[in-house]
Image (cartoon, rainbow, N blue to C red):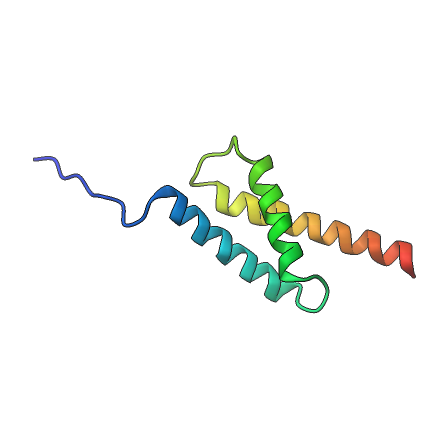
Length: 82
């Protein structure tokens, strides 16, 4: 007997929810240094750049890439404006 399970949410919904979770985690991590709106833009760019990645790897990869881009931005900002 074969059992087929229906997903509880569409891929777009789960990707949107995952993106929100990622933005929320990064916003908490970088609170006071960069706005959640800017973080959302960085996450959007990371997701676009990682469109080749599997859907299972995409959440972790996009969060790592976005975090690295934010850190690089903050480092360059600190070096240029001190």
